[in-house]
Image (cartoon, rainbow, N blue to C red; front, side, top):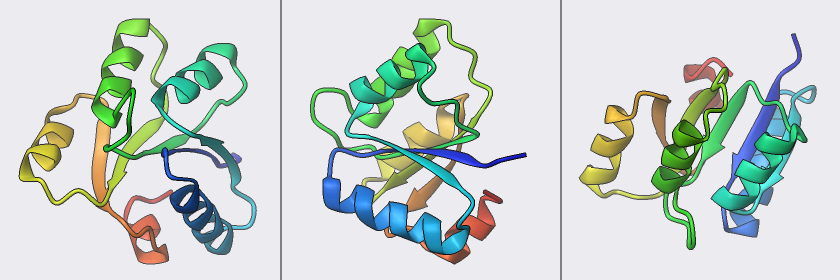
Length: 122
């Protein structure tokens, strides 16, 4: 089964770094990038991306990570992929909110690394 990952982050540098980390981890991973929650929802709704895994930033303008999760749940789309929050936030309430979400599998602190990818069994 091929691995398809959707990276969602408003920061182009973080997107690039995370993409390179994923490529070094497994060169066969198919990587899609969305520059925010709204863009990601469009990609998912249109079928442009069918991920096994989403790595989702929390702190984004317009639609933050938690807004994205709410929109995904209310959209009625089938969530048949793992969602991991990937953030530099050290706010305990962000971690708590991620842990309480029924569709979030884990919370990963930036920067992304091979050991962190091993831990989530990408």
